[in-house]
Image (cartoon, rainbow, N blue to C red; front, side):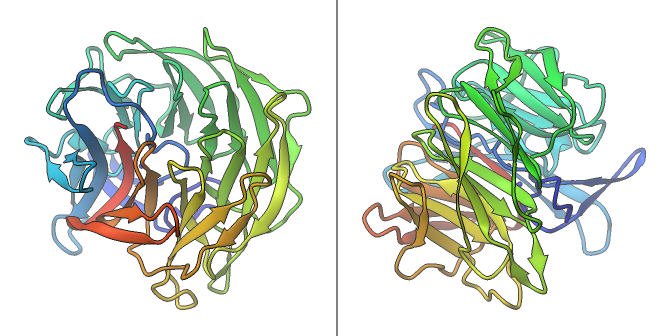
Length: 389
């Protein structure tokens, strides 16, 4: 995938602590935009795969954790998932974000349990992970979040300071080479499906960039940054619809158990400039994660469960294809095990990671979600997800 800091963009209002050889490390479980969903499968692979970054305490109060990246073969005909032999992989990445290269051949994560370096793996034919030569890739400061370009061989890494570094991905080996970057601006960040533009969102501004297709270098668009006219916005997760026309950003602001509205912007297809869409409150609580389904008709939003929200924490919102405005589908919000979300880019499935992994089949006519798998990794904290298709 997915800290209570409103400006850091976590997927859940939880601070996770891991004891390392150098002491106690607190890390943010999510920051939006980098889940890895929507990538094509590796060429020639007979299966599709789901990767879940998860952990659990070895015994209550022990302060010791176990976990890593769990791999599953996904059956698109049924929505079922089957564990890949050898799982979990990459145990030093315990609870860290996961992101897939644009061609779905390589998976990247962060060594949260050690030094915050970038872990890199090739995806084998059976879905298992093999370390990329030269990995892990040491960074100047610990990395907090990763986002890959869906249309080019670039990886964007955000440090705890907020600084962003661009890495070129070797399309043959998966190795990383640092290119350039920008100073701390905010998070989350999202990239349009065509890989041409990147948006970084802070509580008060949206920074708009074009992406150089040769180097990955970021160039501010004319008029960037754009001010956000609100004092009640704590950006968390973010998603862009498949057409690249609308940005949706969750709001982690909390008001005595109630949440602030979710914010959205339309993207000008010619200039890339953003314009605000009226805010919308999908549920009573602060929102944790957002994804847009393969059809582009629905935004799915999870809410942090509070005494104000109850168990109805899974909202499905219809997207107006012209304006991008949101509206509840009948019956929404639904009961769910709500956490970090990833949408399948070619099938009507939604993957939800929280206490375990739930796979939902989304009715593309009504928007009603139906769980088809709700028992993967039961009891484990699933903080980030990636799908190879």
